[in-house]
Image 1 (cartoon, rainbow, N blue to C red):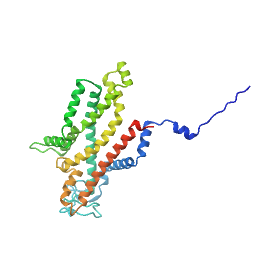
Image 2 (image 1 turned 45 degrees about the vertical axis):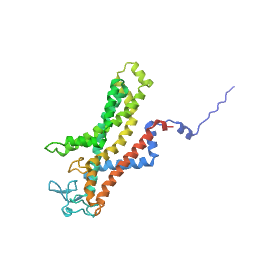
Image 3 (image 1 turned 120 degrees about the horizontal axis):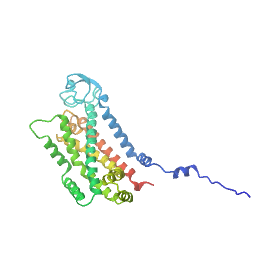
Image 4 (image 1 turned 120 degrees about the vertical axis):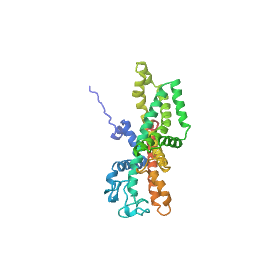
Length: 323
């Protein structure tokens, strides 16, 4: 007597639909389904490439730089044919020149390098201070948590821009002017000092919730040191909110740098900054509006792109939205 067996095969689409996907692919899929995220990502990547290849994108011309040599356009090159008043766009200067004869397009390109460099360095300082203090305050208890959070509250009591202005003014005070690179370092330090409290409070709140999880209790019961638990177990599970926070904070850093440069306490000369370009163009807004519109547009698009990208990352990385 033989037993008949019947095999049931499921459709291929049912199998593929039930197959698990990796978290990275799931996040990428959510990002690609968001048009604002795609456009913002393309813009940010393009801006990064422009900043990295700024010397190659500066077109050849007749400019006379600070070294007196004629070469490709640099951010401090001056075209002596246009050195009295701003000039409109022509075949040589695609966006025209400013009142010093400097190429606007070239300064916009180098301004992107300056803005992104300041943003990257500031968010690194912010992440180092904010994540470290937030982790140790959230995992700890008692006096350590109380002390670190009171320091954070004191930082929150001061407006960011005013505190950054104060720090920059103190660093640049003195009878002898600092070199441009040291001035820029002071600006980055000032923005980094005022940027970390929000991230520290975010990390601390997330760490308070994670420290009661079973795997943390198991690691603690097995004798793992607190420092190892923080860096091996807590930090990897906090990467998603940290990435979202620093992406959105990068937009605020770029805007803060432009604000300080507009007020004359930002990126020092001769380095170009969108904020400094806006301040220099205000006097010519009626006769040469492109001189003001170009840096304003670049600043607005960059800030919006980072904000949209941060919002999209928050939605894509939120585990409550995953099916």
